[in-house]
Structures are given as C-alpha cells and as structure tokens.
Image (cartoon, rainbow, N blue to C red; front, side, top):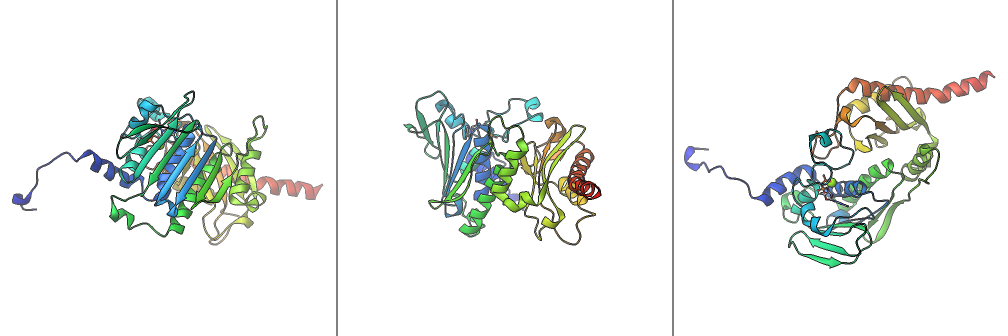
Length: 350
Ligand code: ADP
Ligand code: MG
C-alpha cells in the first residue's frame, strides 16, 4: 500500500478476535460436536446425548450428566482462555483432560447463538445463560450440562457457504461421536437428528468386569459392526513406556478405503503419520496392493512424552521419541497378527 493509505495499528475488537480464533477450531458442525463431547467427558459424564437439526447447522445440543458448572462460573466458561483444567505450565505438560485451551466455548459462541444450561452436583437448581444477551436465569434440569448451539456461522456467511449438504454434515457429526464412543465403552452415547434416533451406543462396561478388552470388543462391535470384531485380533503390547492395546484386523478384513483406522493417544483420537506408517508397516508382509488395514489402537504413554498442544483441534500430536512409538505400534500389531497363526500351526502339528 502507498504510505498515504496506510491505516494505524489498532487492537482488534474482542468479538473479532474470537471469530478469527473460531476459524481454527470450528470448521463445521462436527467440530462443535467434538468440542462439546470432549467437555462432557471431561466433566465425568456417563451418558451423552447429541441432538441435531439440519445436519447441526440449525441446532447442536449436547446434554450430559457430568459434574456441571456452578452458576457464578457460567459466564466465565464462555470467555477466551478460561479453563478449569490447567493452571500452570506443569499441568499443561502432563494434561490428562481432553480440553485445556479454554477456547472452544468462546469460539463457538462467537459464531453461533449459544446457551449453557447447567446444574452442578449437589445443587438443587439449574441456571441458563444466553451467551449473546448475557442473560442468566433459573431453569430446570437434572444434574449435568446442556450446551445448545444454534445457527452456526449465522454471523459469518462466508464460512456458512463452505458447508456441505445436511446429510454430509450429519455424517461428519456422527463420525465425531463415533470417535469418542470407540474410546469410551464405559459411557453411553446417543445421536438424534430431526427428532429421530440415528445412533445409540449403550455403556458396555460392567463394573468389576475382569477384562476391559471385553467391554471394548462389545463397543467396537456396536460401532463398527460384528464383522470388525470377528475379523480382528486383540492387541496387547508394552515396549518400555509405551502400551498399545485394541484390535487389529486380519489381512482379509482390509478395505479399499482407510475408513476403519482409529488411533488414540491417551484416550484422544489422533491422526498421526507416525502411527499410520507404523501400522501400515506391520501389514507389509501380509497385505498387498492398495488394500487398507482396519484397526482400533489405543496408545498409552506418559503424558510428558507427548505434546498435545500442537494444533488447536488437538487432532495432531508430537511424540518426544517417535521411533519408540513407531516400534511399539508396529510390534504390537505384528505380534497380534502372528499369535493366531502360531496357535493354528501348533494345533495343526499336534
Ligand atoms: P476447555 O475444555 O479447554 O477448558 P472450553 O471452552 O471447552 O475449554 O470450556 C471452558 C470450561 O467450561 C471448561 O474448562 C469447564 O470448566 C467448563 N465446561 C464446559 N463444558 C462443560 C460441561 N459439559 N460440563 C461441565 N463443565 C463444562
Ligand atoms: Mg473444551
């Protein structure tokens, strides 16, 4: 720009800051679903119900039975960088909750009409906060929280134009819940669209159950289908500080699309090149051509050895020692795939 048309440097208005930040976190209705379900899980919910209208564009409501938010903190929950989950750098480096950035509710409420309804544990009344007007009033609810997000991107029409059909947005929302459901067989999930129940996954964990792999297998069967479980083998492996569990599909279960590949790090769904590559290399000798293996892998690792603060949506992580993780995943799958073959060979020899 020629110097004459240069404008002075100014602080951006607060709302615009939130809307800019929202661009990183809230791409489409499914991003809102992911953030709200994260929050419900962090609050200790055992049942989470997601209700959608028009693929989530007109309404996303996420209802939980978790610990709730005290009345006085409802307005704080909506503020940027306000969180109950970390207080210092040490907490950040060892974070065990899904959230910690204190950004989601601020971002979401800057690009929608958001309302928070919550009744904390031990309180006998609920309060409703309307984010836009700031109005806070008593309301009725059992213990837990409902976050209602209406008219997503109503104030940012450019963003709204990028949305796909309701059916496509709905599919993404369901996938967001599916990713959570596969990590938490102990929590019940339901998704409703336009008043119809679309998916329901009941909590499959029975307290005192000796083998958590059984609960996981039931959840995997509910979410991905009986075939997934029948055509996969359990993974259970530990290399140094890295524990890998879950299930790996037998080579015959491989698909043409990579749509049944789920990886979790400390309970968080991630997309990670190291993990995908490690899994792929475990199938190197048994899977040929373009076929994609299927798996659900759960990596447990000291939180200090993985940085989750790499990306605003936290879908990417950075491992302190990626070779260590790569090896653990590769060996975990190789061993799991070899076990039934070894058993079959032993049975045939005897
Ligand atoms: P973060 O999850 O990173 O802390 P959010 O903006 O998602 O940031 O939420 C802000 C705060 O609001 C959370 O730290 C939590 O204390 C509270 N909160 C949000 N959703 C819920 C919920 N469903 N149940 C209880 N508390 C919640
Ligand atoms: Mg959050």
